[in-house]
Length: 291
Image (tube, rainbow, N blue to C red; front, top):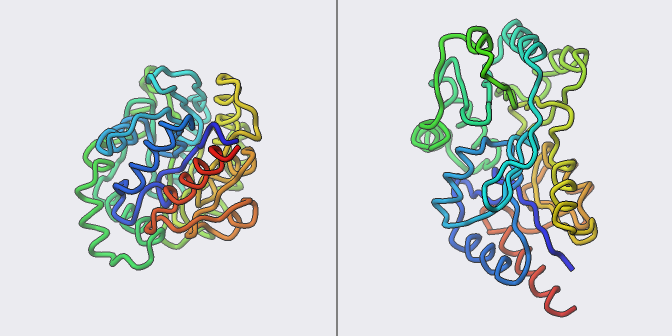
């Protein structure tokens, strides 16, 4: 019997327009009404993910920033894993030296040194996750998305990190050339120690404290709820979902998931434009009712 479902956002609960469909919304509510807790597990920051879920009229707990922050359904912070300032400064220097566009994410804010470049990079991400989407359309959607409008541009990350009040939860770096472009910098980041590098698409890398992983956060959350591992399901599509797909009793790959996620998952559902989340949630509800 499934009692807890952790679900990614981009490429999973979100369709190609970066919104939650009515079908998915109703399926989530139906699952909740039938005793299944629904937990968002995303690389996104709390502010943007909460805003999007509020627009969809959904109330859930959150694993944010790949596990750097975890909130219960009441919005109470229960887990926090930040990147030490000295390692954050070293990471900034590495990414700057390598010439990447990147962002710094804290508990309350996402910071950029160039918002126009951010729009372009989000558009590349959208096309990567949804190949049928035209790049010009992706740029238009990206520019109006709350992810962009809620961000803050700063003149210098180095100056930002000189503020002792700033706690870095995650870095995200973009490159439309794909993962091969990050090979060298990933090796350098590994040498710093106590950091983990994942990805939510073929055009980015995400850098967290080593304890900030979706799988670890999911198991910790379930333990607080007295939910067993075999009562957990996790739904995802990309590399930053790998740890929770492996940790859950039932790992679910989206139809649009990368091959690795499909290989390690026990189940593959429909893609994100076919309401794959709704499809598998309805299956879980039906199976629970039969037990």
